[in-house]
Picture 1 (cartoon, rainbow, N blue to C red):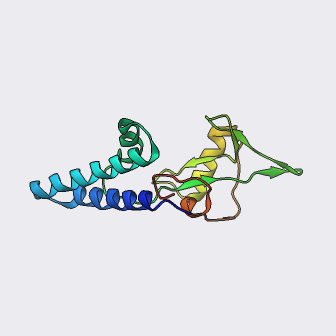
Picture 2 (cartoon, rainbow, N blue to C red; picture 1 turned 90 degrees about the vertical axis):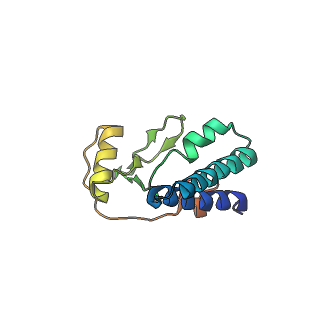
Picture 3 (cartoon, one colour; picture 1 turned 60 degrees about the vertical axis):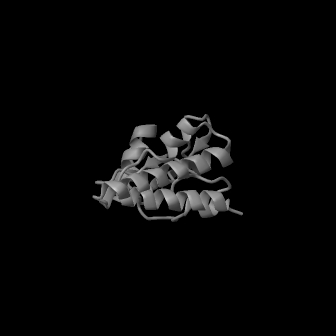
Length: 143
């Protein structure tokens, strides 16, 4: 079951970011900044993390909050599957954060090349996944 406190903090952050982006009134801007700080405090308290770490991870974006898109490639040949080692030492499908001005296909090609040195030609989309609804752990962003 998802943590309600994280959902609330995410919603507060989303409202705060939109307000900070579009509001012109200095008093409203002050209120949205306070709402943003409260969302960070909620996450830091419940996740038992340092406030500065949560601020950097959870509230470092500016502008209207939108989902982050992560692309992954399933590259197989002769019954072998390409995996790459992530920074944390775990093995994963090659991929990463999508660049905003590239198509899905271009992002997949770029990520596979960067992480493995292989040139690929994507053929189809295999799956679309909402990370926070299907992964075992929670993430501060909508991915």
